[in-house]
Image (cartoon, rainbow, N blue to C red; front, top):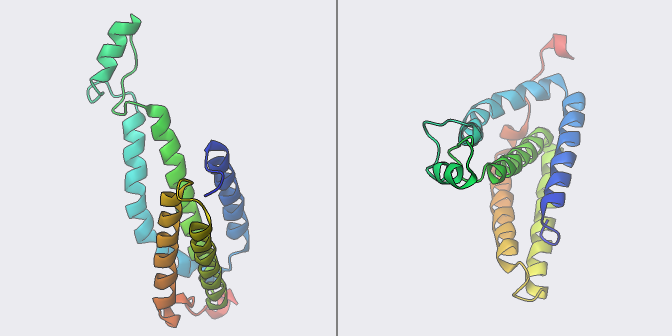
Length: 180
């Protein structure tokens, strides 16, 4: 993403996340799924609020529409469906990016339900942060330095957070005898 950011890369990320979600949904064991749902449910409720707000912004609500749409109607000479957002297309793209990030976060949580897989995620994040830090050092300052710094910061935060989770939090609840 750091090297080739754009609509095509964002679409590829969304596609890969969708395929990974489908695979994860098919392969997640019942005990792990119950534990995951108990962890994700409150977070999903909070994460739904920004997505719903973006949807409200792109709906043609004439009473809440941005005043720019009146000017557009006058300039174009015909009625225009007004929205809260000045650029509904950009809002929809932002919603897609937000949902992709949520999908990746959900996949990370689903994979990290098992302790051994959680360790592999921690190692992979540490390697990714190291690679991004190396990228920052070796690339000229004019090429995406701010974005690389953001990725290094986020990766470091996630790595530290993952390392600080107690081992009992990554284990699924014990399965009932009927689930075995």
